[in-house]
Amino acid sequence: MKPDSPQVANETSPAVQVAVGAPHPLRVLSPRALRDPCGGQGVDADGVIVANGPEGPVGSLCIHSSNAAVLFTRVDFSMTISYNEHGRSDSASKSARSGQAQTVRLALDFSTTFQGGVSQIGLSYSLTNGQSGSKSFGGRITGENPTKDMVKNKCGSVPMAVLAYLLSGFRQFDAHGSAFVTKRLGQTCFGLLAIPSPTAAQIWNWKSNIERGEQLYQEAHTSALAYPQEMRDAGHKVDDFDRKQLALETYQRFGTSRSYWVPGVQGWIPSPAGGAFAEGCLKVEQDVRAGNPPAGWD
Picture 1: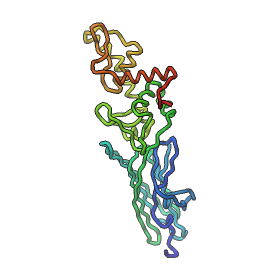
Picture 2: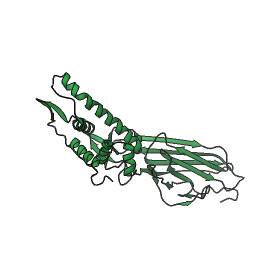
Picture 3: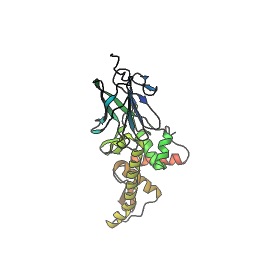
Picture 4: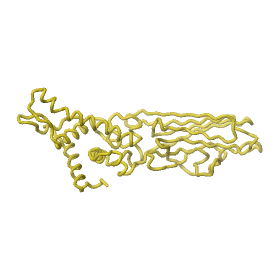
């Protein structure tokens, strides 16, 4: 190197560092770790860290000129995260540019566009001595499951926790940190509450997934409450549901979008289409309330 040329982050372009902080659910897979010239913390290769923010990944760049007489005139830093599995086509991008400085620190905050998947990071810079450089490299942002207690606390009720247990085994992500998927309602569903047609946040943010599941559960509960009057308006002689009947109807509507009960000659009878989903949910709920939860609950 020329005597007046700066040492730019171990003389190469940056790569990616793991910095996982549970319970935040995203991390970046990365290779080896070397010294960060801007702070001494462990980084992978030369100065870019992709770590967990409070609500999503944050890409942080630190790049330094070792020669105070040679400054960066600009540094451009960009990151794109894409998820194209299971019929999805989700993408989020951020970029930042610095002004003139000897040490440049830039951050790309994805907290408002929560996203995991394949990441592509780009860096380019120019210096006052005419030197310039650029590099792009990739990684993968994957998910880290919350604990079962965290899920149950967020669910806030036994029925919601029962659904998370039966639909996903309390998992937002699979063993590889990818989105946990299952087939329900004739389509691919995602996460703890097996959400159909989710937003990207509902795939990668377990709290958002539960919140959407709660909305769907309340919709199922509201429609179950209204169902007896709808049947009476149609000429059937049926009573309002008791507590057990209402629980079965709500579970069945959430899990299958069908009714558990249909009007019979002398009141409600189970639908000929079957109600195994609702019956399984109610059995787990009763066991949990009785202090005898099923295997894998705790």
